[in-house]
Length: 349
Ligand SMILES: O=C(O)c1cc(=O)[nH]c(=O)n1[C@@H]1O[C@H](COP(=O)(O)O)[C@@H](O)[C@H]1O
Image (cartoon, rainbow, N blue to C red; front, side, top):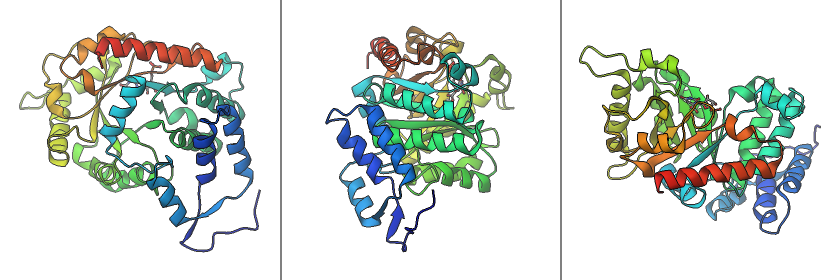
C-alpha cells in the first residue's frame, strides 16, 4: 500500500522501531509471540517514521534493534550459549518440510513457517540459522519473509547466523558484506557463512566489514558432507591440506584482530568426519559452527569428541531433525531445548 507520508531527509528513516518495541515490551508483558508478530504484520501496511536520533538512542540503551550490536560477536555468542546452550536452530523451510507441515510450498506457506518458528524460537534458543536458499527460492516474497524473520529474531534478542555461503572476488565480496553486515546492510544479521574457494584474501572486504560492525563470519573449512572431502583434504605442495591452510589463515586473522580474545572469524567444521587428528583447533582462536547434528548423523557425543580441545567455542547446529517434529510450536521448542541440554552436557558448557 502506498503512503502519503515520505521520509523528509537524512534525519528520518523508515525504521523497525515499533515492532522491536512491541516485541521487547510485549513478551515480558505476557503477550503471545504470535500476537506481537501479528502487530508486526500490521506495520507492513502502515508507515513508521521515527527520527534517526531516536533509533540510535534505542539501540544504545539495548532495545535490541537490528544492527544494534553492542558487544563483539564472540561475547554475544558466549552470553547466548550461557543462557540457552550451544545449539543453533537451523531454519530451513524446504518444499518437503512445508508440505509435511501441511503448508503450501508458496510464499504464503513460507510466511506461516516464519510465524511458527518465531513462536518456537523466541525464549527457547539463543541462535538461529536460516539458510538463505530456502527463502530465495520463493523470489522477492521469500526474501521479504527472510528479512522479517531476521528482524523479528534480532528484535527479540536472538542472534541470527545467516547461512548464505557467499564468496567471490574482492569487489563482489564487498557487495555481499554490504548486503548482510552492519546496521545499514540490506538485511543486517549477526554473522554469515562464507565459502573461501576464491581465495582467503578475496574475502577481506567481508572480514573488514564484520570487524567494523561487531559481526561474525564463519568460513567453510571442513564441510559436513562426504563430497567436500576430496577438495578440502587435498594437499598444497608444502603438504598442508586446504582445510589446514584455511584454519591457519583464520588463526592469523583472529590473532591480529583480537589478540588474547576469541576473534570474529569462525570456521564451519563438520563433526561428521570424526575427531580431527591434524589440527590445533584451540589455536584458531575463533568459534566453530558444527553442522550435521541429527539428520547427517552427528550426535552431541561426536560433537564433543571433535571439539575436545575447545568445547567452549562450539555452536552445534541441527535443522531437519528439529523441524521434523513441527509444526506445533511447543513441540519444536521442546525438541530444540532438549537437544540444547544434551549438547550442553556433552560439551560441559
Ligand atoms: O554452513 C552450514 O550450516 C552447513 C555446512 C555444512 O558443512 N553442512 C551443512 O549441512 N550445512 C547446513 O546445515 C543445514 C543442514 O542441516 P541438517 O538438516 O541438520 O542436516 C543446511 O542448511 C546446510 O546448508
